[in-house]
Image (tube, rainbow, N blue to C red; front, top):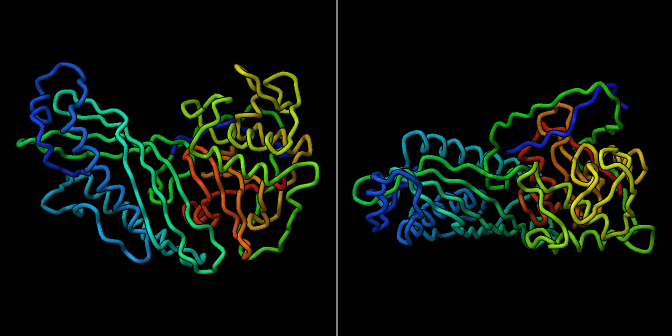
Length: 379
């Protein structure tokens, strides 16, 4: 135990102008309250978002694909001065991430980004757009046993300003997710406030991140737990949520709720009792234990009940094992994810919620957060 405690803290983690052909885009400045954007304006917002987010994805691709739209800064697209500077910085950071991935022996041969507008409103010449990005990156077969793709779904909020001539200028793009950034998303500074309650908890031992590590394979089926069933569950519901469980995306993040579901699918049994006692772990229709949904409480439950033990190195993780991250090393675990595939060369691939992600390599996590503190659990 570590003689300190932090309560669970969940981190939260263009300007493109495009002729929309919509008179509403500019004349809405006369309105007094938010109005739903018309079809032409909504289509323009979708094209703007697709332009920016697709470019971020393609920066990571080793062999650049042809663009489906115009490049930022072309005659069809423009950015506000501030956003253009921010986006140039974002693309530079993604190029650095691409270089770090190459050092890990990872590259992508293709990228496909799709954008869906969920809601768009206009108030006084300003637009607020809620959208969902679905991106599929194809792994380049450098070692030969990589998965085919990694997929993720991210929610964003865009802010735009109308300009004369029915054009829109995009001022900001902000992720609405709590977990690790998507591989095509730059890391933004996040503030995490934690409070020491003076108690002691089983925090566990951080894992080394050096590659390679001494392998620690495990039997996937036939034992106490069915690890293949855990992985199968996670890969089935990474994007299509199981309706038998409530979502916690807007309440600190759904990541630990998701791995708890997968662990239950693989044979973890409930431990009934007070919801606030981390030594208990359970889920009911309208209630659940704190350890079911809280990253810190899950770790305390897991270690105190000997459901899992810490591994010495993150590369020792196998299918069904869990990785937790303390992004800013403040003593509070921020995110939980599960290994659902492990290559023959020893690379774990993780599936998780918030941001909803399928088979993201451990290398990609480390490349995005090289200074974080990691906890690996042999379940």
